[in-house]
Image 1 (tube, rainbow, N blue to C red):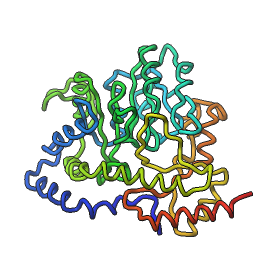
Image 2 (cartoon, helix red, strand yellow):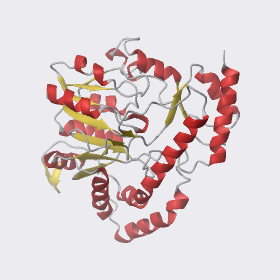
Image 3 (tube, helix red, strand yellow):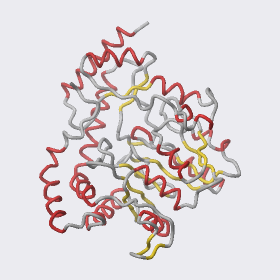
Length: 367
């Protein structure tokens, strides 16, 4: 069996470092907001290139806290992508605001920046683009739109930690960026985890307050907050793994290139925007007859995944926000996308099996 992802495979490489970190944690016993949390936040901020990193329970929690900290709530609108995991739109709804979906670019799967202006209304408070599959959208143009309309800009970088755009790291652009440390992410912990990044000291202070039940100090609650703290255990694991991240990202890019070089045209992953350094959280291509190909690969013991089988406005919870056919590129992508196995420990032999099986399946599935 060739797994779609294999987060347990990395443990062997990191076992000694993780064990040392955990032994230190068990010795001091500060399982909530222990010293590893502050150490991790400093390391993440340095890596991303911002003065402030705030760790939290999950990427979804990070999005909700970003919106709350920016004062976005009932009656407000937030422009985002309809082709992503549900968290971005879910977080908008959780704070009482309304997600406004703008279609994607068909070749990159990223938010179509040329359509954002026309979606802005008097109620719009923020733009929340998704850095999907491991690369960032055109932030220069998004920043210009945000300035023109006086909007906040929030990056959902749950899949793009480590990516760059014109040398700037994912998480460092806009008012605030977030990422996820879900186990299958480029930098994954052993449970849920996330972080926010910002250049704004006041915003960082607000985020820290909101993640701790609205308390600026123990016993003094100045806002209605959440229990959003990252477990010290997860911080310890991430500290052990962070030094290996650049090696892992290089491996992801190398494996993605092997796919792109070997697969028949036009079966390539999403186009990489000029100026982007992709981290390939997923290697995603498009197939007109996807289901037949998936079945063939499964028969050969090859796992695949579909990111995402429905656009967000096709989900029952959000179908009232856009009519069917209103966002055709997102809807078509949902029908056609297929992600192949890609992770740093994937061997060349296993990847060759995927490539050969996919080529055979395409032959079988051809009309």
